[in-house]
Image (cartoon, rainbow, N blue to C red):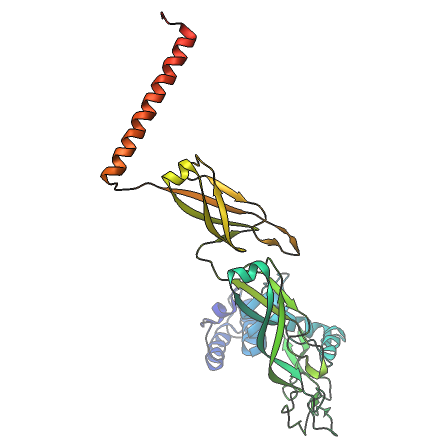
Length: 374
């Protein structure tokens, strides 16, 4: 299928006058009464069809978006990512042949509608996420106007049917295509598809039926939430048009990091540094947990980079706060970079004793297995 713009020899941004001049020039060139070359008549018909499509803004828009598939003359399927032009095409077909599908859907939208959902981003501290809490927030949202009860008209009055569309919310226009005349249905520009006009609007809400207010809410943050947790507060979104039900409020949680504790799932990780003497002899040290300070017993002979586990000191499982994870404590051993003379003498004695002890132990083992004369 030839490109209509190429047939007329114009760019895709050509205006109406450029299209008309190009068409007239080519029509004279390939008119069957003037041009007797083989194929001239077929070329003349193609030029005529191209101009008929591109001269009409609506058919040109559909052609630009979907090609000839948007004109109903090809079996191609338009891109499902943008159904705007394709939906108009369906409306043309259904209403042009007496169908009731699009009409019915528009009529339903004239009544009360569900309000929009709202999103609120909430930053909380590390320990607040662990144990949960009640939090007061302020949100701007739309509420049904109490003066007009969501109708939008001044009390004692009411909306009237739109004179442009007769209350249907739609206007129709006949469109000529190469395949015949079709009736295209569009939203009424006077009432924006509502079908009714408010001539005496409510003074409180300006005829909108809703008004924006800033509302205080107290929400419950359950124990165990984490960054990305989404809390739903039913009915606290925007009020629906024409007295429709309110949408919901979704609270998205973001947890601030802690300087000493790190979370992974329901477990908490931390680390402490101890001296080499504490690692050798053992000790008890105070460490940070989400429950506060805790006395951690360091067993004698603890190796560097080993991990000690504190049961039930982790994060409560979301939805089951009785079950908690653990805290894993990584042990870092600090070696001194400088020692004084007294410390050096003590360490050298210890090293000498350790060396002598090892030699005695090894000699005893040798005699045990091989005898004194060996």
